[in-house]
Image 1: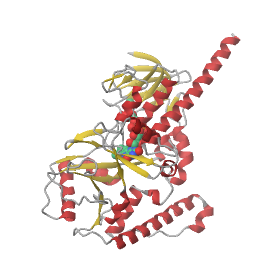
Image 2 (image 1 turned 90 degrees about the horizontal axis):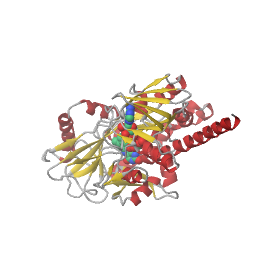
Image 3 (image 1 turned 90 degrees about the vertical axis):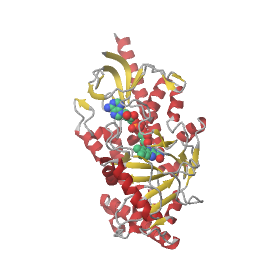
Image 4 (image 1 turned 30 degrees about the vertical axis):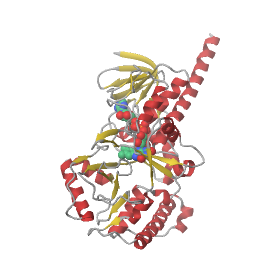
Length: 450
Ligand code: FAD
C-alpha cells in the first residue's frame, strides 16, 4: 500500500513527537509518524518491576532551578509529575572497599580533588592536541591506579563531568536534578504533549497519524520527494522526512538511503561516540543497606574500573520497595547485555556481599535493560568530545535535500538529555517550516508567471 502525505516523521520519541507537534500547530496536518516499536517514548521507558514503576531509560530531569526554565521541567509541572530531589555529590563519602569498610571522608575528598585536577589537565591536553597555541599549558595527567582512584575516575568521566567542564544544561537551566518517581512513568510527559495535537482517549493515542510497529528500512530521495519503505512492505510518499532515530541507529545498517548518504555525512555520523548506560535493577526481600540522609548513592571500589561501581537505593523514591540500582557503562554494559541475567545477578551479589557481608539475602528478581542490542536504539546517548562539538554536530544535523535530521544527538547545547531531544524536534521543525514557506512562495511565483 502507498500513502501520500506532506511530512513523515520517523520515530516517536521526545524529538519526533515535539517535531510533529510544532508542525501540527503550524497547520501541517497531514503528518504521519512511523514508530518501529509497539509504543511511543523511545529512550524514555518505564517498566513494572518489584511492585513499582522503574525507568529503564531517562530517569532524571537535569537542569532545574536556574535562571532559564527547562522546558521538560515545565511539562513535568503541567503533568503533576512526581519527582524526588537527587544529590549525588555525597556518593564520594560512601565509597566501600572490598572488605566492606567505608573510606574515611578526608581520603575520599582528597582523592576526589586529585581526580578533578587530573581530569582538567587531561581535557586541556586533548584541547591542545587540537589547538597548537594551547600546547604550552598542557601537563601530564596522572593515571588512576588504586581502586578508590579508579572508582572516582569512573564517576567523574561516566557521570558528572560538570565539575570538570561547564555543561550547558547546568549553566543555562540550573544545577539541580530530580529523579522521576511516578507510577505513570516519565513517558506521561509525552502523552501530555501528544494530547495537544493527536486524538487521545483514556490515556491512549488513537490517532491514525501515529503508526506503531512500522520499521523504516529505506529512504529513497530525490529533488521531488522522499519515498519511505517499511519492513512490512508499506510505502509512504512524502514531500519531506524528519528522521529522529538515534545516532546508534544511523551508524547501523537498519535504514538504507537511496542514493546513499554522501561521505561528509557518514563520516560525521561515524565520528560521534555512543555511550551505553545501563541501570540494572535488583529486588530484595528486605533492605540491608544504610538509608539515612546522604546515603542514597554509594560506590564500590574495585581494581577493575566500572565493575558494579555506582549504586543507588530506591527507598527515597519508593519507601519499602527494597530495590537497588547499579549502573554500568560502555564495555561493562555490553558484557552484561551478552550474558544471562542469572549470571549478572550472581556477580552483583558477590559485590554486595563484599560491601555488606555474607549474611545479606539473595536478590529475588533482576531487570537488565539492553539498549545496546536493541536494533531501534544501539546505545543510550551521544557523547561528543567538547573540543569538536560544533563542526561535527553541524554535519550530523544538516538536512540532506528533503531529509531533515533531528534527535538528542543533533542538539549542540543539550545533547544526551531529554530536553535536548525535545528542543531538537522544535528546532528541526522550525527549519522545515521555513523551507516549506520558501517552496510555497516559489511555486506561487511560478504560477503567477504562467
Ligand atoms: P529516541 O527516544 O531514541 O527516539 C527515536 C525513536 O525512533 C524511538 O522510539 C525508536 O524506536 C524509533 N526508531 C528507531 N529506528 C526506527 C526505524 N527504523 N523506523 C521507525 N522508528 C525507528 N536524559 C536525561 O535528560 N536524563 C536522564 O537521566 C537520562 N538518562 C538516560 C538513561 C538511559 C539508560 C538512556 C538510554 C538514556 C538516558 N537519557 C537521559 C537520554 C534521553 O533518554 C534521550 O536523550 C532522549 O530520550 C532521546 O530522545 P530522541 O527522540 O532523540 O530519541
